[in-house]
Length: 394
Image (cartoon, rainbow, N blue to C red; front, side):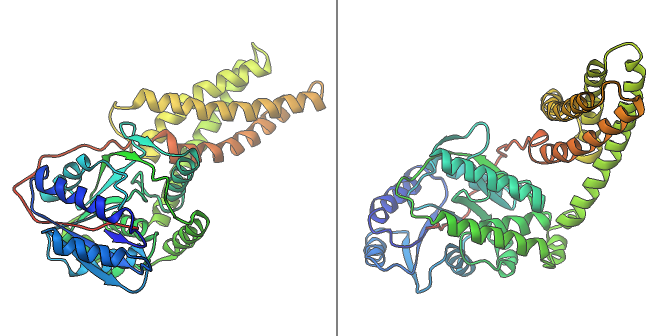
């Protein structure tokens, strides 16, 4: 647990954690308190806890920073699995075993708690919920991240994997988690997600504005980064993962190709249907038919989703994107007929095509961040005991 100025919460919560590990957790585990830059009685309380409770120790860092604390303590640890959690124990401790089980089994390399899964039970303020969801959507749009919750203070990593990745992580503060996960994903490592029960800490002292600024700078840095992850990929035998920019460019090209086909099909359908029905009706029916085909093609070609699972859900979400496209084209058609009483069909087609292209940009963003966003964590079996080291963030 890397902590800073936590004199009130440290004692009772370390005791609670130690009791859980001793009575309800099947593997031997050590709790390391990483005091990074405290100016209150946190360090003195930590020293008393370490002398009183077996399996608790404390490390003092003069400089603050969650990332710095995690990096130093994890790098020096001899445990097989490294973990951390928030000192306020916002995450229910019953999620600890599902978190580390896939790492002990060798199934996964990194494990994270997620507050954004459908089965998670979360109590927190709307402002924090909005910021969290917006941040993770931003990571998907800019870095093609596939993990759902970058900043949940409940994570674990196999020690051998950590020793490869930690030297490559530059951030020493709150962006540390995101950078570690992005590098792991780019190296082709397997990230396991565990839905958690989580209650917001009303005494949280995180400087949101400052943290948001640091996160945005971190995202910009990672978008420019040329970190060589090939040795990690080769060591663990993972398939090669495209650079996010290359992957995004390939995805955009595939989406555009599907869009061109859909637009051509839409124009042809509109011309045929317009012969026997009003413009708005022909526009709506043409959009509906091509929207179903567009979602089907993008599901398979652009986003690589196979099988029937989630197919109808994807189509329903695709229809929401269709609704946005229809509203844009309907509005443009209404404006055209308002300006010109009886426009030529060639003019109608031109206006509607331009409106469709505008709707395409919005549709891609929705497809990227929502329509095909169906990560569902599963819990694998696990193997015999291994040593776990607990570390946490302020």
